[in-house]
Amino acid sequence: MSFNNSFPPERMYPNAELSPEEYELFVLNYFRKTYPFAEIAHREDIVGFDGVYNIDLTIRFEELGVQFLVLVECKHHKSPVKRDYVQVLKDRIRSSGAHKGILVSSSSFQRGAITYAKAHNIALIRVINDEFRYEIRSRDNYYNKVIPDKLSGALNMIWVEAINDTSLTSKLIEDFNEVLGISEK
Image 1 (cartoon, one colour):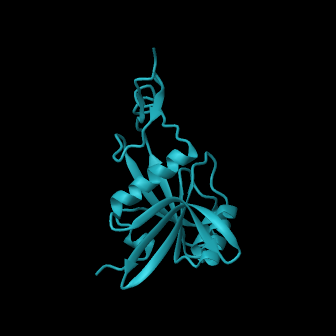
Image 2 (cartoon, helix red, strand yellow):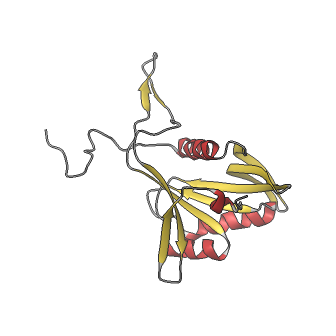
């Protein structure tokens, strides 16, 4: 038996395979843990002036006496997220009158997506999870997937942003206030 050159070895910590809904719930749990005061809904229908949109996550909170609405779209893709997804989110923000948009991805973002997001004040967050286990065996001998509140592996959410046409920057998110546009009191 031989292990590949990765550390930790893949056999010890297999890659997690989440469905799109499980990924959304994972992101929802992370936001709920970080902002327990906010009202966070999963797959909510939001009425816009040109139709009804089903949004992966909505975050509502009050700050300075103002009710805020944040639309969060979750993309669990293997390939980099394209500009089109950011454009769709921007259109939904405009139509619904939301205050902020956040696109959370398990993969990277294409340069056009990052440039467009910066121009339209949309936060791009990349979830990087090196490893975790989430399957347990049930009494019925089925494998149930469990989205843990706390992961066994290293989890980082990174804010990705364009500096100019050819350079990108990213930083570890330790405080979501900047992402949500909340000023410190």
